[in-house]
Length: 261
Picture (cartoon, rainbow, N blue to C red):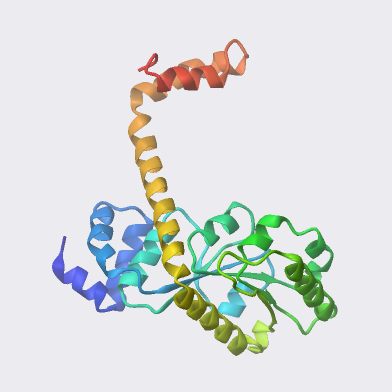
């Protein structure tokens, strides 16, 4: 590993950081060696996850961020962390599996909604309610904002306390006019301080590391397992499976137990 390149990243040299991000995101040769060297310098930045339905104004609210929760987003965050960033913002492109992933990656998770979310708030799936540390009602200058905020507060009030006794707040913002953004920043800092004071940040970080290691092992096993011979066997058997002469479960059991090698 190029020590000069490593030193520049740690010193927050913009070009070096950008180069490292590209290397990691594209999974270029040497990217894992770089991440190994950078790991000892990580763990200081506070990672903020922002999710919510498309059109909620997440990007306007954050003024730009590391968009979309892709496979390499955790590694990209590690690069930024090692470069000395105090806060890292991770924004998802929408909701779905990515909302759960972001909650397992971020220290503080913000769910952004808009007044038009009114009818859907009542039917909001438990997953979205469970991951939020802070709710933000953006575009709150629109009609119906107060009603949606009140509904959210009522739902939160009925929820059992969080594992670390954090009280979830509902904030109203208008990102395009920069209204409420200072209050949001203060709430993020308040949540960060609460995690530090309760010691729960250490628990969260260990949970994040556990997920990261599980993902790393699963990815490496998948790449190693599906060699050319096994892929050829799958290709040859897929017709029989699609015609229901056999089933995918038996094939999977056989290939894992090395009856097919």
